[in-house]
Length: 77
Image (cartoon, rainbow, N blue to C red; front, top):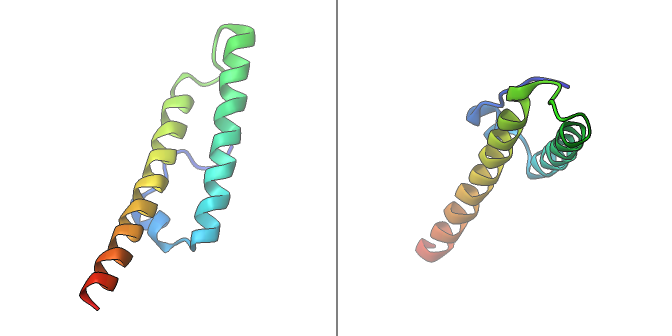
């Protein structure tokens, strides 16, 4: 499924809607990977689950950074 690693600059260039959509896709993919692992006992691609989790964390971190930036701007403003 798609590229493995999302770079932080790629994530920052996405619109909030694109990030939410990508997050939804990654969570669905993680669920599929975990399900196939539990059924067969062996994951199709062992490193994929770890990379999906990292990508989810990267997106959530970027969203939080932007949220904090907006808060700081309103406090200064």
